[in-house]
Image (cartoon, rainbow, N blue to C red):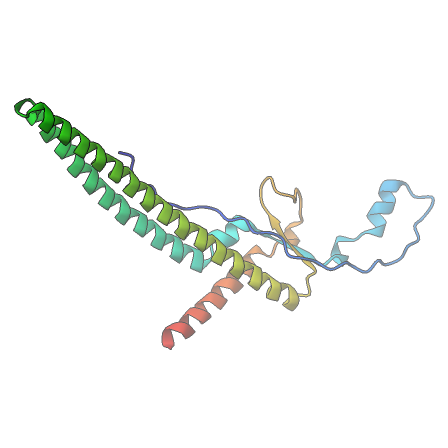
Amino acid sequence: MRKLGKVLGILGVTAMAFTACDNQGNTANTNATTSEGNDTEVSISDLKVAYIHTDSVINNFTFFKEKSAEIADKGKKFESELSNRARGFEQEVANFQQTANNMTPNQSRAKQEELMTKERNLVTYRDNLMQELSADEAELYNEVYDQIQDYLTTYAEENNLEMILSYTRGGGVWYAKNSLDVTNSVIEGMNSHYTQKKDTTEKK
């Protein structure tokens, strides 16, 4: 029987909605080349954009780590229960193989049908455990998603940002200056906010 593995994952975080920047000046130097015009007309410092490394935010978010550990512990418990049932079934099969010669054809056929039913039930039990863990994981992802989005909305307002991008390998952003990276600031703020909220809840 296959062991029931731990269910973990990485959640991607979508970018927040943004407002348009004011266009400062519509005239360009007609003698400049196209590339020179683009360089002089657009300044990265005027866009008020920042980005986060999605994986780092998720993996270092205290809430996510705590809940992931709970799911992992639950997975280990399920694995142990499934292993015990599987061993019991295997022992029953072994006993049948040893005593089958002493049974009548009807008895042997009835026992085989009984074992087949137990095997199907064991597979169903395994599938139910895996579905439960998958549901827990999906629920965790949704909670983390909502909390990050809520926090980034507040963070953007407090820091006068018009856009916060999600920077992931193979994602929509291929390059960004390190000076625009607010990952550590967001992680620190989210964990501080979560700790304060948790302490308040526990005191009630």
